[in-house]
Image (cartoon, rainbow, N blue to C red; front, side):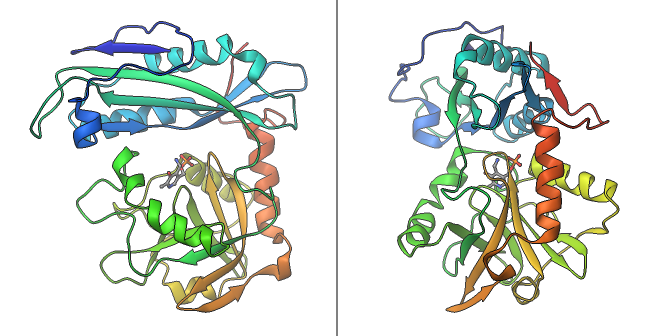
Length: 316
Ligand code: PMP
């Protein structure tokens, strides 16, 4: 689905998947004026398709657009673009239990401009791709390498929105971690260099003495939709959940650690390496709390359990 505008977005048109034409002087290519979102659609046993909290993605894109001086699709337009694209590709939504359809909405300054200023034209695109597990071993525990040179975001910059430049700055750290056999990178805060922030594309949680703790959103962390949902689910299950600063030493002393995100869903962490020290959690097994939250979250996302909160949107 594609829609372009020089002001207010209109409803988009469905076009076959393929390369899009972009002016070499476009703001997105030259100055990074672009935002992405990510959602997953699941097929239920009865063949119908469900989405998880898609309006939250629309709102996060609008917030990012505001920060980057871009017009954004209204929530209804975003939802309609996402739904139309999924329904036009519904044969690609895997059967229940065999994966999901990843949905990637993109908003970009597609108009030509030389000089740092808002683009004269914008394009909103939605494309989809069937996916399985983000980490190759599925729910088995992942390994994180703590990054000691680079930070994911800096205070007063754009760490709390889903803008494309945030990802460019972490490719090298991600590659280094993968080259060393780790699944992903754990970032520390850029000021004190000791508080845990997040992972390349997911938020982080720790469990200590049955309390669930996740870093406070200080402006350099992306407010994940799965993070917020996990907090609400955990509270509904009776857990005490705290949002506060977590020093790396405290994380290394946790009973369980897990990550949350649309792509990673809820992935248990089996090992964190910091300053050459390797700390393992759960003896290679998924922790009890991580497993309980994973089951509760995925049952809602797949439309198997009632969420009671109107989080799941039925598409057909
Ligand atoms: N942090 C970063 C940097 C991310 O890219 C993502 C993925 N969107 C997340 C956290 C998790 O966010 P969500 O749960 O909304 O997918």
